[in-house]
Image (tube, rainbow, N blue to C red; front, side):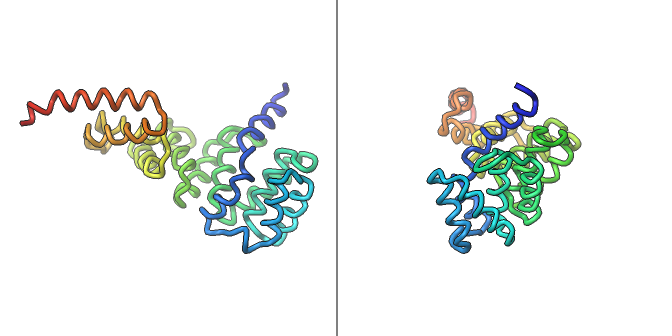
Length: 233
């Protein structure tokens, strides 16, 4: 498989559910497919398997400036759904949706640069788009931004900013961010005051979502806190 084919496969897998999540994305953005009958009809066609019909309707709505349609049209073009793959047009419409301040489009556009899919890898460019989306409360973007600050990828390494965004993503329900936030509180430092009780709570939240490492940390901290309790008395 060529590098281009690999990129197509990876992107198709990553965005396979993008249109099925269109309603959730719309709600997050304060949009509603109901306000645009053509976009609503396109989503219905897509879910029913009428991809060519969905593509045409998304294109029409996108040309009128509906940013949900711009995003969905871009995804179909990038994935070659309902017609031939068109990376150039797909990128163009994805950028339009991102420029229209749709946070999920901003996240996806940033991830494209972070991964180097269909574009030259550019973590600094990705960082700018992750930041735009994260500031709007996009949880995946907050996690991606936190990872960049922690690694010093696309921006200067800054553990304090990393913690800030991990905590935001954790509060938004992201399991990975909950685990990492717990680890910050467990060890302390980088502007975070050590607090094993708070760490334990974050590990518990991640464990409740099925993270086995978080469950182990929760059990370890529980035992440690119980052992130390008599000393505190």
